[in-house]
Length: 109
Image (tube, rainbow, N blue to C red; front, side, top):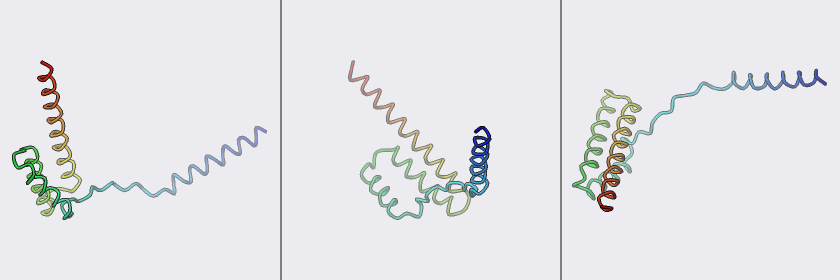
């Protein structure tokens, strides 16, 4: 009985090892290139027209334009540009949340 358990364990270990060795290497996940997406440009154009006085939206739009130019020129990678934009976007979200929190606190007073 113990011999069968050892053989079963060895077979399972061998199968798992073979799967790990046979697995293709992981490819880096590439970011979507929204610079080449006409639909996303239409969405941004509509957004900045709808909110012309929202400097956060205007700033993100300007950053997007600049990053897309830099990607096209090859002076920044798509992944780096995506990270920069996502970081800036996250800061805007945090800023808006903080402003909402302050507004709620002022309304309570």
